[in-house]
Length: 241
Image: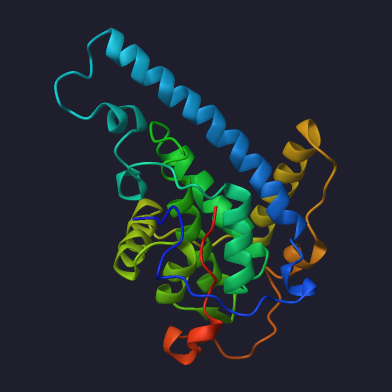
C-alpha cells in the first residue's frame, strides 16, 4: 500500500543542490489542474455515497465506494488517501527519478485518456497517487533514454515493487497499450494545461525545454538504472508529511 508517513523503504540521501530541486513550472501547472479535478471528484464521490445511502442502493454489500467510483480503477484504489499532497508527490517523483518534465505531461495525457475511456471511474484522492507514479514511469520509458527501473520508482512512489509491476500492466491494458502520441497532441495538451492555469490561477507557461524534449534525446543508447547499482545512501529520503 502507499505509505502515508515515514517508511523503512525510503532511505535518506544527500540533499540535492538548489539547481536540482528547482521545480519546473509544468509541475506547478499540473498540480493545480489535478488538485482542482480531484477536489471536484471527491465531492462527487461524497455526494454519490450520500445519495446511495439515502436510497439504500448500497446496503447490499456490493461495496458502496467502488460502485460510485466504477470498477476500472480498482487496482489503483487505496483504503485511504496518503498524507502527501499532489504537489509534494510530483516534486518527489521529479526530484528522485530525474525524469524529463515532459514525462509529467505525457503521464497526464494517459490519465486523461483513461478518464475519457472510462467516464464512470473518477480520479480521486484515493487513486491519484498510484495513477501518477505509474503513468509517469511508463512515460519515462517512452521518452527518456536513461531511466530508473520499476523497483526504484516503487521506492520513490511509496508502493511495493510487486504492486507497481501490477499497476503498470493494469495501466497498459486499460490504455490498450496506446502509449504513443504525436508532438501535435503533446503540444495541444501543454496549451490546454496553460489555459486551465490561466483561467483560475497565476499566469504560467510550460518550459520550452519540456516541449522540446518530446523529440530530443541527450543519450544515444537506452539505459535502465537498477536500484542495485545505487549506494544505500543515494536512495530517496523518507516520506514525511
